[in-house]
Length: 192
Image 1 (cartoon, one colour):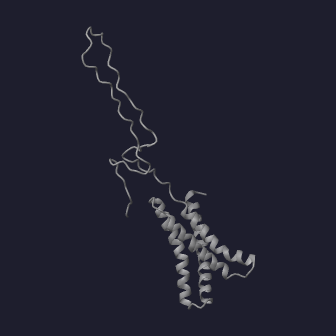
Image 2 (image 1 turned 90 degrees about the horizontal axis):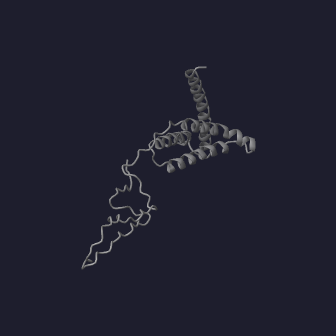
Image 3 (image 1 turned 180 degrees about the vertical axis):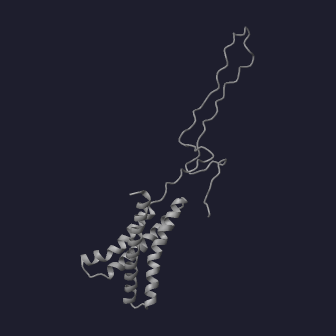
């Protein structure tokens, strides 16, 4: 089987599972809404909102990962809508372990399908290197003293004023952790 044929078969299977699982999930959410007093059209609106929101959030999660943006809120909402869909599946089932399991299959299959498709994200390019090398504040530079002057032959007459003693430079102390050096740029946040 060629790669092109395999891709076509995978797409057909993906569409078949997605269509059937989506139809079952839509129907369960609709029926649960109607059973609990909502008009028929609101039942369908609830089904569309719950099921398509899960798909949209999955796509948004993938886009944010590619752009290296935070995904916490989107991932939490995706889990919440997936659980809401799963709860609607189970609530419509016969009250038994097998009834709940069979009713959960469309939702679980759909979620697994979305997860497999969305996790097929292309590899991200490496992050660009910053303009300045990072500074390790734990490495304190060693204190250096200037090389001593070469020895000269002794003068017959001692000098009247003693030569000043070599003054060593004070040790460089790093700033406390969390303090940004004033000559380095500091980005607080990026607004897109």
